[in-house]
Image 1: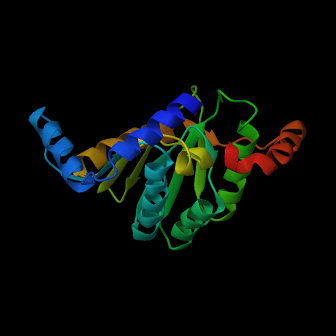
Image 2: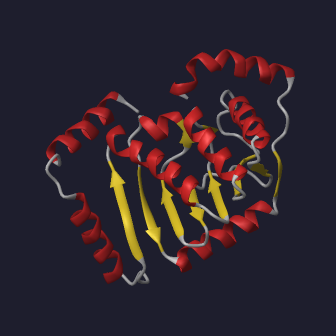
Length: 215
């Protein structure tokens, strides 16, 4: 995140320090209804700097604990922190069908070896990870048990979860969740297991590990 944008995000939070975000999210939800969006339940809408984006990490951990049947995620970058990795693996160990779809063709080749490394760790904990074969995948969403849907700009990496300015919404709506699940299933059948890291990629991942939280 650039210095100018960081300053703007921080100023945004300063100006809205006394904002009632519950009322604000309900106002935005009302505006969505007025535009013809089908009625459901808007649970959370957030944007700003890291102070807001950290809420997504907490939300994701909560969904991991709440999920009973399915927890499916789209992310272009799979470099989460250890707490998020453990939350996903705990959900899988508890019997939840946890799946993560990532791209097969990376736009940041230097970082992709870490995606492969994290995929191997998650798979060892029962999480299914596949790479979308036709091209780059930039979708960013979570769908839980055909009931909860999260759509936003967050990536499943440390910077998005804890530092960068991101935005998104959590909605309780079975129809939206069903649409996301159909999209995920169509993507899943066009995906394959994440390729194993080659020797040079393993070396690159090892060199990047000290900077893991910055990627």
